[in-house]
Image 1 (spheres, rainbow, N blue to C red):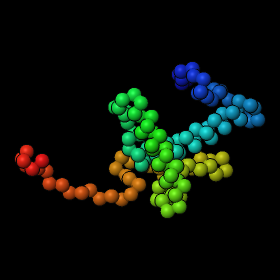
Image 2 (image 1 turned 180 degrees about the vertical axis):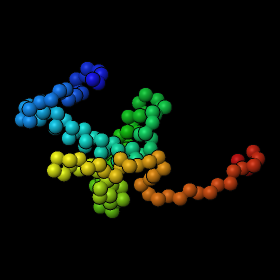
Image 3 (image 1 turned 60 degrees about the vertical axis):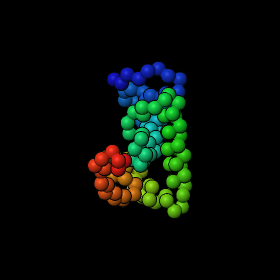
Image 4 (image 1 turned 90 degrees about the horizontal axis):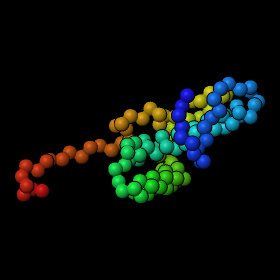
Length: 132
């Protein structure tokens, strides 16, 4: 059993097993579809915008602005004809085929991957305070 705080804008699935055409089972299925859409969007965003992967140690209003900026950039990149396939290539999102969910490639993302193959820039550290 999962403990979820009671909230007016939070939906949770019915627990238990229900008949195939019951309202509870239909609700649970549709809720899982909505959850998959959110997981795909957040998974893609957090694989690109690393700031979403950990707590933001900012003033209370700032995280909302950071998240909104990421959402705007996500939508822009998804709609861009030239950048769409780089930002979200085919197979990146979860899809459902014959009732089976096929995981998108964003789920395989590791900490070191990036949307673009950027090479590290070698840097020589300063040896004295005069060089800084």
